[in-house]
Each structure stands twice: as C-alpha cells, then as structure tokens.
Image 1: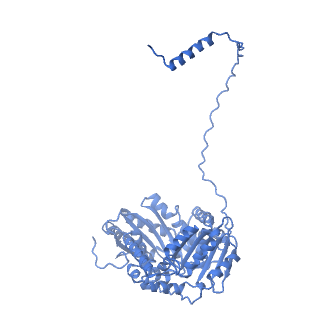
Image 2: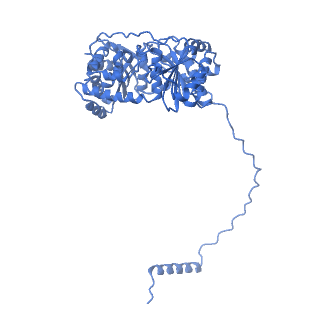
Length: 511
C-alpha cells in the first residue's frame, strides 16, 4: 500500500486552492490606466567644484594667560609653612610635604643617603608595618609616594575628601614616625645595589655619571651620583638614616602644599592637630666646594663600551643657578637650541641626517649653578660626524636667531603652560619649585608676559654668555675600537680615557 505523507497532502491542498482562486470571478474592478507623465528634459550637467586645498597652517590665537586661584600662605608656631590653593571642581585633594634638603646634603662617603631615607618613609612606622600601610592605602583609594632630588625631599598624598581624615592621619604618621627598621634598610640597599650594577651596563647612565664628575669633580655634591655608588651604599647603616632624618626633617625646613576641595582654615586646623607637635631644630647649611672643571679648552672624555652599536654623547659646561635673572631668556634660547622637537639640534641630527632618534639640550638650574648639557644617543658609525654637528649648532646659536624661530619658541613655552595646571596634583607639582627656590607666589601669573618680553637681543646675549663651545667638556661612551680614531682626527681637544665611574684609565693602548 502506498503511503502519502502529511506534507504531500498539504502541498496538494495548497495547489488546489490556488487553482480555484485563479478561476473565480474577481469582485474588485480593474484599476484605471495610469496617467502618462513626460519626464522633464534634464539640465546640462554642471562641472564638479574643484576640491579646496589649504596649504597654509592654521593661525593660532593669542596665548592664554594662566592665573591661579589665590595662594594662601600661613605659618604654624613650629615654623612649618602652609601653601593652600582652593580647587572645588572635584572632591579631591593633593598634599605635598616639601623638605628643603636633598641629595646635595649627602655625606661624601654616604652617597645616596637622602634618596634612601625618602624611600624608607613608606616602609613602616613605629605603629604600622609596610604591609599595613599598603593595605590602608588600598582600602582608602589613596596614593602615597616619596622621593628625593637636588635641593629637596618630598612626601606626597592624593586622596578623596571623603577619606581625607584617615588618609591625612596615615600621611602624618609616615612623615613623622618612620621606623627605619634595620631589615628594611638592608632590603632597600640590596635593591639599590642591583640597580647600580645594572646602570654600569647602560651607556646613557654611564655618560651622565662621567659627565657630572668631569664638570664638578667627586668632591662636589653635583659631581656624585644622586643614588650613590656601590661603595657608599654598602656603607650606609640604619643609624645613618635616622641621623639624616633627625637633622633635616624639621618643621622649620618644611612646607606643606595643599591643593583641592579644601579651605585654608580647615587645612590649618588639621595641620596643627597632626603636625603641631613636630619639634623644630637647627638645620645645617650645605657647603659647596669649588667645582674642579675650570676648563679653558674642549676636553673629550672617552669611555669604552666594547661592541656598543650606539654612542652616548654629552657636551656642555657648568650653567646657572635657578636664581638667575636670565631665566626666561635662557628658556627661550634653549627651546630654539635643543628644548623642543623642532629645535635646531633635533632637526639637524635626527630629521636632516638621521644620526639619532632624538637630540636636545637643557639647563639643570639648582640652588647652585647646575650643568648645561647637549645630549644624544647616536649611531656608532656617525659618532665623529655627530660631534661636528653638535659643535656647529652650539656655535651658531651664539649668532642672532630669526624672528620666526623666536616666535615659535615663545609660542611653544606659552601654550604648554595651561596643561601644567589641569589637575590638583599638577598644580601642587608646579608649586614645588616656588617653595624650594623662593619664587614669588604670582610667578605663573606673569609667566606668559615675561616669555613674550624676550627679544632677539636677549637670546643672543645669554647664548654668548652661557654657551661657550671653546671650553666645553665632551663625554662619549661607545665602542672605542671603532670610534676613537675618528674622534681624534677631529682635533677638537685632548682625548682622555675614563672608566664607567669617571676615573682616569692610565696607560691604556688603543685597540
């Protein structure tokens, strides 16, 4: 018996229904014929407009002025200074405790002591372990950091105002009651010794170390590494750290910068409660021996780094202190020379010749005259050619600069300033040099106008006074076997050999 599926019946039924529907008379009248519509004659096609190309760069408007909210300055009875800036846009606050002593106060035989002391602040107090400090910061959602540099040490806190009571209590405990446990001192010393060992293999670190030693000598604080040496690090004991802290961490040597959703009166109330019992003390003045450079002609310090594909170059001399009245003219001049991507050094050595990924220059302004340096990491085969171009640019900056270069440098400095004041943390950071170097509280309010006042004559004057290629120190770290002959052939100056620590290498034959 033949079986028919249900699907077959369904298809047959559908077909029958279609046939019936097709044969049935329609009850709907036929539609009327559609009217005939004649399409209009199209208009002649118009040629497409030529694409507009604007080859002129956009014209920048005037540089915005930066005016900080009022800075409230107060002093506690123990000598601690408060600087408070109100910023109520967000419920955040930044606190920076600035100590007016740093790396320059390191004893000669205990190099790196200031930075090690600052690092140890976060490694436990008399009532909290390092782990407890970290756990509490995580719970509060706060950030705590510490460090040391030339002319200062600092402890910084970033917190929400909702957690400010607890965060500030922790901040004050870390600042006033560090434990400096011997175990923590030894642990951080081991970490530093590892870092120092690694830095001995990095040409750029070697170049920086030898350059400072060449300018100032090892007896001057600026001639020694900020993080010390292997020998000085091994010599540091927990008692040295405690003595350093007790000597320099005093309220009359401290300023607390506060920026955020706060009021000066509330900050003073909290500071009195947390720091009021901090006892003032005599802080010794730092003495600076005479720098040993005193060069009257260029001297080349060559450090052998066998097999190095690049050479690290440092060229310069002792510069100026931060207190110089020529600060703004020097900023503009150095921006033209090597302080921006479009500077002469970078455009020459990178963009035009391809010797390096970047070349630049700068003045390290400190309480005492810091170094001026022009620097780059260049391909080893172009070491001698790079030295030629460096010296050409250092000589030519002493001539007049074009009005275009001057205007571009001013704009670069003026337009980047507002970005330095976008957050509570960045505002606090910008106030640190105001504290350390005794700048006027309205320094940034007049910054743009003082940059704008710099003239071509000012640039030429400071270049001729502070950039003198005829007596600069030149440090080159690279593969001696492949670069020494070319360097000597230049006849730029006497070539002396140094090791990775800057010590003279005697009786070393050429490879």
